[in-house]
Length: 332
Ligand SMILES: C[S@@+](CC[C@H](N)C(=O)[O-])C[C@H]1O[C@@H](n2cnc3c(N)ncnc32)[C@H](O)[C@@H]1O
Image (cartoon, rainbow, N blue to C red):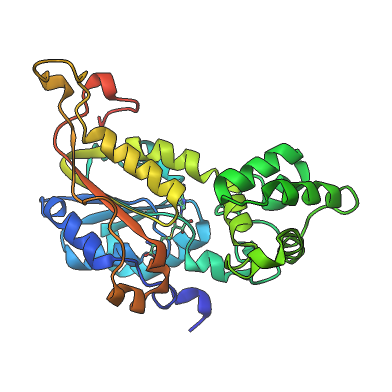
């Protein structure tokens, strides 16, 4: 089989059974629709389509290659699956275009896919020399090389510190800017060499691959990942019918913090604490389904190394969002 066609073989969906169990009560509704906002290679979507025979899935991905692969994998499900090329914060527009007012489930499995990491040419992996690209949607937007060649030193340092939690961000940023004056940035291998040279030998021994944090930071910046997630969470909750459920799997602390905050906001009373009686308008509109963030157990980790850092959170919509809290358009 050609490597690209083997979508199922290249990615084991993380915590699939747990996702299915959490979504099950909502997806039992007749005519239920679920949005898989991070379709990837379609692993979770295939699990949903097999487990719930009446459910329709709308699969969103910003990566055209992922959509093509997943589309081939899911063709056997006919019109129960619809793939859409979009960024996940566009969920309301995607549903409007399909004439869908509200949905019973939203699933988000954040970050990069193994497909993207494995495709050497896309520049996501520090282990392979490749062009400094890192765009999940290679049809638009600046590349990692553009960031390194055009941002000023302070902004590069900020990206590395905030998105990569890189202790040596100022030193790396200084060297990035110094080097580009003579020769613009082009290849991941050159960046790996520079980062390695900027991190003291003693730290290099303990901190995992020295370029890991720099690559994560650039990927987040290039794809505007945190801003898209911050918009997508309320928009996704808003797309849920009452009784609908959202499940989110995050793989790094900045994303998990946004998920935690967005779900907690809906699950907490918005009444001022000193009111003697909570007005009906201020009662929560979400019920948390997970206590804190769930992690993978030993069995899952043995099956799937990608589950190592997963943090899963889920919630159920219990009533419409009150007007004074709505920041996004309501379902039609
Ligand atoms: C971890 S993979 C999903 C894997 C999938 N659950 C499976 O089982 O095959 C994440 C996918 O989400 C996509 N993605 C990440 N951020 C996105 C965004 N803001 N909008 C749309 N798709 C996004 C990536 O392109 C990638 O294909």
